Image (cartoon, rainbow, N blue to C red; front, side):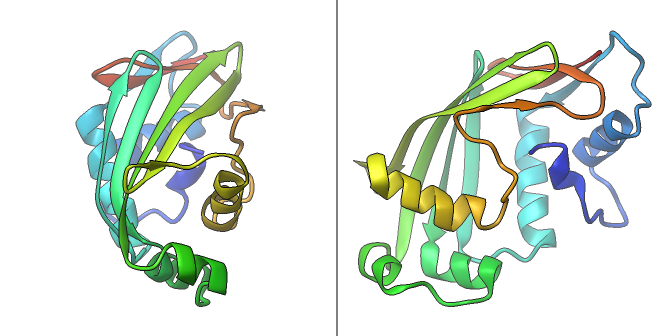
Length: 177
């Protein structure tokens, strides 16, 4: 997903965008790594939200750990769905998710030999843990509807000769095969 998000590049590419382009265009030599600092990734997130004119998400932030990431944002699901899908939310969304909500998500990254997996560890909406069918519904309506090729809780092949992706508390590292 990280590599795919580089589509639709603006005129002045950020450091993250330049690094992604180098990886995608196979300009990084085999055996080398490309590092993205937490601040670069956060700046890129803000840049992408502005560039794609996504409405309904404020104050996105995240922290990195040893192959863990925790992200949070204030989300107005109605504005987000209208912005992303071009249609108003359904009645269930209006009843359960009206107004701005604080969302916190924690994931674990596993990666080896050209494959990766992002496991969803927890999702909280206003401090309430979301799981089971409610979580499936949210993923289907707010993640997969926007990113239909996204893989959650399953292995997927990495692109562009990427051998492995690692998270540390200070950075994301992409190792080139």
